[in-house]
Amino acid sequence: MREEEKIKAGILFHPGDEELRAIKRRTHNLNVDYNNTYEDETEKRSGILARILGEFGEGGFIQGPIAFHYGIHTRIGRNFFGNFNLTIQDDADVIIGNDCNFGPNVTIVTPVHPLVAGERKAMLTAGGEQKSLCYARPVYIGNNCWFGASVTVCPGVTIGDNCVIGAGSVVTRDIPADSFAAGVPCRVIRRITEADSMVHKPEVLADNQVIPGI
Image: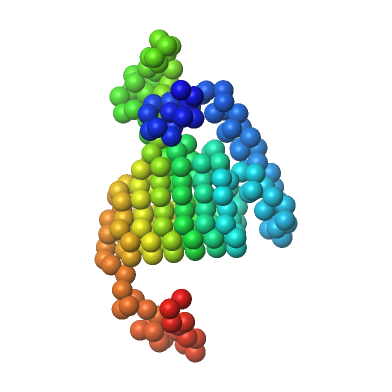
């Protein structure tokens, strides 16, 4: 079994495998290319993202700088906004839905390393070789999610549709849809309801209007 197949199977793999390293080197170099562009070089930026990511939907914008690890394991839906310093360590799949907005310094990680120091240093493969091994868990993020600044999403987490994750949160477990969640570790504070509508904040709404059903 190839190391890439082991990642997909959720079992231990060797991140130093030459095939995996080639993917990462290519993506890391493309990160540098993107980070060296100007914001108004939209066509150039789009072309680089198309080479980095498994999928990037229409209407998306990533401020940069960016740091994707594999890139090809990340799929992002329509109308995505990613602020400064988006980091996605996508050893396993990272799937992000439509209409998501991420504040600055958002980090998503998928790899998991052994807790025992000796095992983290090396283990024996099926072929009897000593190698550093780890495994990875995919991350799934639903539609219409907003992450505040410096949110970290840990391996294996699923976040449902319409969630707001407060700034500085470390998300270690699943968050159900329509939740406001925050903290270290992140926990559900409450459900988001109609009571949270801007219509109830006329001092902020001013002469603007909420669009029904959007």
